[in-house]
Length: 235
Image (tube, rainbow, N blue to C red; front, side):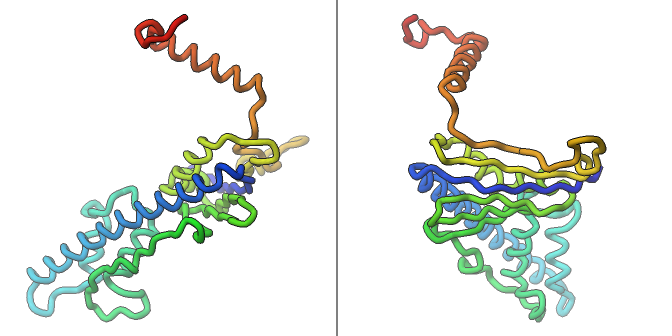
């Protein structure tokens, strides 16, 4: 079922958490770029094999690319985004408007790495992560589209971002919220219906909330059969 939706928001990051956040995003992005580059080399090698095995003049680079990356016979990992697939394609076949039928060897420079102190944006499929290094703020923006929020949050960098945000200890004056809307909520009738709604909140927790979380953790440990004496704890 279709669901047009969007989400956005800006968070003020605590000073001590800024470096771990910006570095964490860069490290994850760079690891992904290396993985995509390595796969591009594999695709290139397979295309050369196909060319070698084809009859003289019968090989077509675009057709070979489609055979390896489209439909049930595709060898591209399902986790790769459309942008990553396009990056690989351009590294092997060249820019879309300048193709001659030649096959090029993918180069590392085609898959640039991020410098944590300079990188300002990261792609998250239907979403974008933007960093303001001077203000130490992170902005999350998901463009309105069918299941856009779902896709963005489930993207590689989307998962990385939310995992890093979950580790931050928010302080007074930091944090913020993400908010959004979708076609079903927007069409709701009645007083107060249809407006934008909060999708995630990040803030400093109260002492009572922290104490409750600790109690919940203790109950969870006991519920799973942990023995304090067996773990070396004293009651």
